[in-house]
Image (cartoon, rainbow, N blue to C red):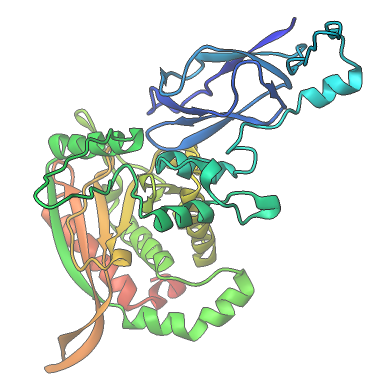
Length: 407
């Protein structure tokens, strides 16, 4: 017998524990090297824990829903054992021998997964777990009948079901129903950090407006050539990131943070981009954004958005950041007061661009306007600096040629 331990991977410094979601194997099942054994949820991501060796899952130490720490042993794999089916014994037949041919032993190590999982993609399995849907009851449209995330979403809509975070409450006339739903770990963490930010920082918000016509004209003129050359669409997010870096260089205090009685000024620009996902808000980091081109930024944001849907963003990609940007405009927001992501000292909120009447040279004209909001920690950033920072953002977006001329 050769036993190896299945351990929770080491978590980042900001993550102290995780939750075991769903074991995809039972004790006694054969497992193959690289096969996902269980999904583990932290307050930032859902991790898949693959088997490091083939064999038999001989023991499950921690059950579904258990709270675990990094490096904790949660199961054991016997790399020399072979999963065997119970032999069929008739009254006239002698008991079956327990010897297994080498070829059969190898085949037994790759036993089929339990019903509902063998033909379900990992991302669909996670989504089904979050929405409390049995994947075995979902009709698969993927290769060989595999159940995909789209199939799970379709089943949700078809059944009129709702996610645990937004339960449906059918009521008969006169009934007043309630449903108690436990918070997911990521939602608990979001709530904790937002309360921490409100309690530990002196948050103020200042506003400005920006005429997006110059950026829109530039984008319209070059978007086709940009996509042909770089293989990604030219959106507006990259312009806001570049504008933020431009303003942060002018006002380094907005890129700084408070640590006790000290101010820490960062000589780099790691911009967090808030992305909404089915599990909640995540803020992956564009590291060294000042060194990235518009194409680099668009590629990275598109990659993060796609992986956020599948819960594939890593903890390292969510850790750190010196400044954040959140875009409520994608949901139609006109104005908001974003909350700082600690230990950062400021966050930029951008909103929906709408045609609005504005005064130019004594005339009322219609322009595509966007309202900007900067929430900042008044312990380190004064109102003058916050206002001037937003003016610099406005200056860049209304004159995007500034970056080309290095002015």
